[in-house]
Length: 254
Ligand SMILES: [Zn+2]
Image (cartoon, rainbow, N blue to C red):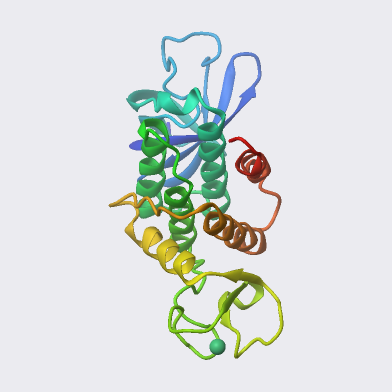
């Protein structure tokens, strides 16, 4: 029998397997992302109940197996029930979960990313309003933890600080902001100083603090464009969840 481990874990994804089983992708605090087989989870509620539902935080016992881990038991820490009643909250939770899966390789611990995601799920479940700015901060914090840090504080070419005058564009192929002196002519995404500084501050504050950015609709759209472009360029592949979230966020009357 393989070694038994216990760790707090967030449920990122699951896929039904055979008649009664399920393969569950977990983001564990101590071992990073793992995939485990939960036997009989769809036939009986005795062993796992709803404790391996999507976006749930549970203390999970798992044993090494061949290829997949075997999930032995789970103790509920938080069901994050507030997420389930609202499509926007579900879309955000799915988006951050999918991003985590893409950024974090299997069995590589990312304790900070774990804390960011756990706090983001709690925020999505409990907050009265789904503040997009705060969640963009979480998205950037996850990227930064994985080593993808867009330059938002200064021009990547001449180091002129953002906020020190002049206009800036975010150019994903250059890795961040470029000032108008270094890049004459329109290219990239035009960004306001406030968007760059607040986003950068918010990302650094996670997971200790959930900063509500208080950005207006235009600024939020800029933050969204920056991060969508950056994620698309670096993480690659299609983010299934990004499309749904984008549609929801840009739909009128939201
Ligand atoms: Zn410059």
